[in-house]
Length: 244
Length: 319
Image 1 (cartoon, rainbow over the protein chains, first blue to last red):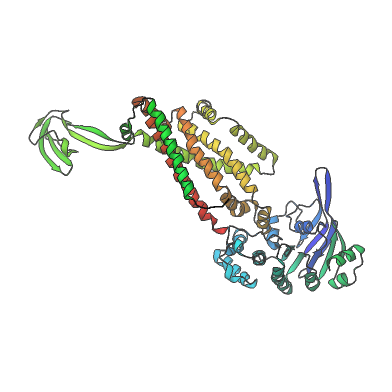
Image 2: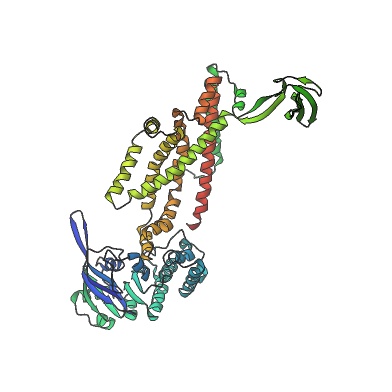
C-alpha cells in the first residue's frame, strides 16, 4: 500500500544543513498498523509528512498503491484524497461548522452532492461520538472533540490509508483516551494506518509493527512483542527506559 | 488610590472639552468680520427649476381647466391644429377665448432638481465605488502574486506596490490623465478611476498579503491533505479566514479612498470637492461651503464604517 525507498529530507538554511530524514525505507501493507516512535527531533513527523507530499523530500521515492508521488507527472491532489491525515494541532477550519468541515472536501474533491456529503458526514460524526455537535463551530469544542472531528473529516474522503501525526500530543491528558479509542476502532476495522505517536500503550496494543527512529534514521523495526520486550539496539533500550 | 469605573465624570469632561473648543472657534471667527450666509447653502442641494411654457403657434385658447395644482390649457391654431399644454395652476397667464401669437407665455412649470452639492456627492460616490471594486480586484491579484513562489511573479508585484506607494496620488492622477490619457485617448473618468484603483490596489495588496500570511500554516496543509488544490484551498479555506481578519484595515483603506477621490477634481471631474469650489466662486460663501462639503464626506464615511462594524459583528459567530 505504502512503500518508502531511501526517503531523505535535507533542510538547509544559514549555512547549516540538517538531514531531518536520512534514507528511510519501509513499507506498510493493506490493513497493517505501523507506529513510528522516537525522541523529539528524530524526524518521524517530517517523515510521515513526506508520505503524502506535504513535505517535499530531497531524495528517494514514496509509492502509494504503486504510484510514485515524487514523479512530476503524478497528480498529488488525487493521491492525497486517498490518504487521510490527522494533525497534532487538529487544523479544523475555524470559519466552518463541524458539518461543513466534513463536507467541504467531499464536495470539492470527490464532487459529491450536498445531500450525499452530509449523509456521509453525519454517519461519521456518529461513529466518532459527536453526532450532536454538527452545527457548532470548532472553537466551541474541546480538544478531544476537535481531534475526533478531524479524524472524521479525513475519513469522509474514504481514504485507503490514514496518517496520524502525533494526534494526541496537543491534548489534555483526560482527552487522550477518547481519541485513541476512535483510532483503535479504526484499526480493528482493518484501516491501513501509519501513526507517529508517543503513546507507548497504544503502540503496544494496536500496532502490527513498530518503527523506532532517531536522528532521521530507522534504528529498529519489529513487532510490538519483540520491540517492547527484547529490543536489540542500545538506543532503543535507552529510549524505552526513559519513556516507560 | 481607589479604582473607579464610573463613566459620567469622563463624559462630563468630554462635553466640557468639546464646548470649550467650539466656543474658541466661534470666538476667533467672530473677530475676523466674516458675514455668514447659511441661507444660500440649501439651494445648492435642491433647487426649483422654472421652465417657461410658450404658445407654439398663432391661435385661440379653447379651454383652460385648473385641477389641483395643475392647469390644462387647450389651444387651437388658425389651421385647426389642436394642442394641450400643462402648466402650474397658479401661473396661468391666459383665459379661454383669448387670441395668442406664437411665443406668448402661457405659464410656468416648476421642477425640483439636484443642486451641484448632490450631483457632486453622487459623482464622488460612484467614482469611489467603481475604484474600490477594481482596487480590491487588483489588490487581490497583486497580494496573491506577492506570496507566489515564482521569483518573476513575486518581484513584479513588489515593483508595482513600491512604485505606487512611493509616489503621491496627485502626481499619479496627473500622469494617468495627461500621459496615459493622451497616449491611449482615455476619458477623464477612466483616467481618474484608473489612478484611484491602482493606488488603492497597492495598499490592498499589502493588506491581503499580510492577512493570508497571518493564517496558520496548518490550515493550508489540512486543506491540501484532503486533496484540495491550491486555488480551492485559497478560495474555500484561506481567503474567507483572511478576509475576516483584514476587514478592519481593508475598510479603512476604502474609507481613505472616498476621501482621496477628492483629488480627481484636479482633472476637472466634477466631484463633491470640485462642486464646492465652483459654488464658492459664484457665492463667496467659502466657510459655509467647505464646512458643508466636509460634513458630507464625514456622513458618507461614517455610514460606511458603521456598516463594516455590523459586518464584523456578524462574522464573529465562529470565534
